[in-house]
Length: 518
Image (tube, rainbow, N blue to C red; front, top):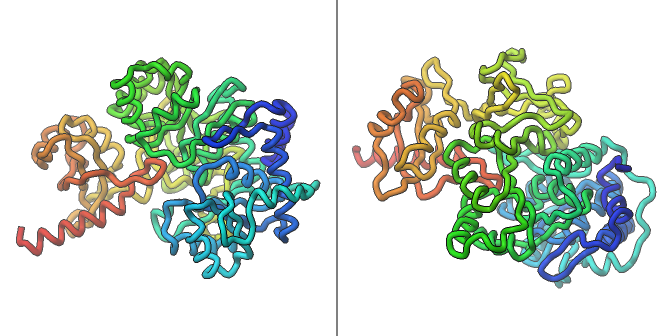
């Protein structure tokens, strides 16, 4: 494949597949050739508007064909594409734009009013661009593309940043992770090869483009000659209908609600319409209960499952699991992608033996760095190994088992408790539909194990019932000392549990009980 940089992808695809359809939306079908020419014209427009290589171009919008066109336009112009999470509050977005010093902001209709407010408060923003003819903005995508400005001939270098994604910021302020031109391309190539994407595939882009998983799968499909269906903002319960409507061959399912939509459609209408679906993508090491659900779904739909473990700091894919391994090792994330190495280190930065739990370390060609944060960059790397901040272990066959975040480790007395290990046991309790485990400060033990539980019935299992259920499965010090019922377990858009939110809620409940004298 004659590719070296992210910016090369649309041109390569246009030469290989020409007028075949690359992107399909509810309104239009866009060919590979059109996507390439539009992104080139928009790249020329960016240069004409004064943006220089290394400048930041922010975007706030739902998934759309123009989102991808602007992504490649920025890559062709050597501009850093700064994706913004549409679920954030205005103050959070303002902080990120100010921190990145983004020069311009691209928005679609639902976010135009907020964009105007951001423009008035963010001094770095020079102009606003609407993607759908929004009124009152400085420019509009179609008008800029129609100028047919010449695309810059001299592009960026392999190590130049192409994409900026702010981390979720579970502690302190989020950090802007920079992914390079070459690293982004490698992530796409690894995904294309591992998922075996071909020109006969149709990928359904449900994952938001402000998340790297959404962009990588779309780009990987492009360079394989496949088609990406972009339905825009899709409610979870419409997931199954979209799979049938577009003849989807693979997609990424990231929420229990999306899984439920597929199961309900099967129960209601049967599997007719799902004949084209060959693979469902999601997270690896989801646990026994979730894997059982996946197994039943895959058996009903005659498709396979592909699980991934990675981080923004590793430019996405690091480890994957597929085929029989998914069901034989339901708590494993799998083994590394080709060219990627995984190791487990102790606190002294020494490799640990098989079965031992320590920090997951990653080494490979697709690592990132942070924007204007020398201290964070210093802590991110030890030589060419990346500190993931995740806890895990490797078995003798090299399969990775995720145990939780290093900062979420519960230290009770002299013992370490890994939340994921306790959750994997509690998930099998017949009265528990969902669960999250975390630590609460304790004067005697330092921390005690606590659990938030979504019950299957009106009554929540008691601590004594939980203790009896866990007896013999995990050590006594790992069993929750307290539980409280919640309606849902809070998660971010990639399915990661927001444990700090549960800690805060538990402390409020605890204080309320103390005031009531209970």
